[in-house]
Length: 411
Image 1 (cartoon, rainbow, N blue to C red):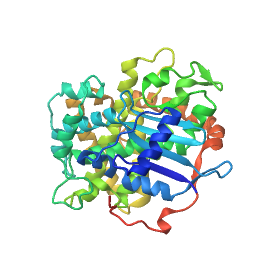
Image 2: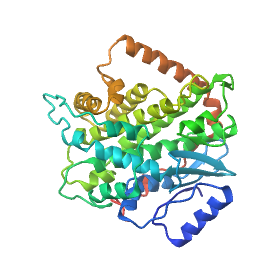
Image 3: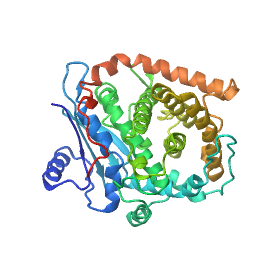
Image 4: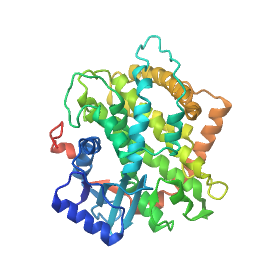
């Protein structure tokens, strides 16, 4: 039977001993164990998603071998998010310092979220104050302590809260970001990226941090430009992650939405997910710039504008698949998203590259034509990788909804 197992921070002693033995055997980053209220948020954000993926029973497309994936939070420094393979076990790790950065980013954007546009008929953006602290956190130039993150999260509704008389807020953005990052990392395993990177490209692990990518094979690999190979894998994982996030929100399997009884507007709910996508896209792009991987590898992550454009495109597609009023939802979501991105750009100029990146209004501007050409180039590289991905990818062997799991989940 397949195993898709997350070791939660509050795991019981048997599970702790099991993971600690795995960590010692393969010299993995030290796990994060905690019974705190804030650790419960880390659990609540992805609890349902992890259960659903485990119940899907993934098997290798080539040979039918069940997946063996272990995931956990680590308190070690210098870790953002990474995937590795040890014998037949895949390990995905999410670093606590990186998690604290996400908490602080969401908190700094709280005032912008509180002033977000809500009027469908006349969506206008409001000027917001420049936030130099936000920029430093995005660039990882300002450490966020455990005490500071705890203070922020203690002001949120408790984890696993159900239908409190509140609206959406910064906790919603945090939950969306955490789920987006986890799904992105899990996609690297499920879609075969980790197998290709370790088995065919000669990497020791597949991580988001630029330093890890700069230690990878330089120049061309398998006759393809290395940086574009890495970018094609990133865009593929983005596709998997955003569709999973939208899918869960539209089905009501949404921990952040379940918390807020006042959250009854699907456009407003998806607007928060869009903000998470902007942060996700800008965050990794800024990391590449900080370590300046050029000219040896070029950038290991796609341009932020391309990632956000694709996030929005895939989101619109998923909405069209699931909602009868998809045209209404997508139109107004586009309008409100453009206004909110403008507000983000006022707060931090790193978001300016996303202005105007909306599928229905992008037009044939020179900038968009260049972006289209770049996307086509990366897409060609991705297609050239399919024969390798087919060797390593996993496919679902059952539909978890044939045996529905109760929702909301209980801790």
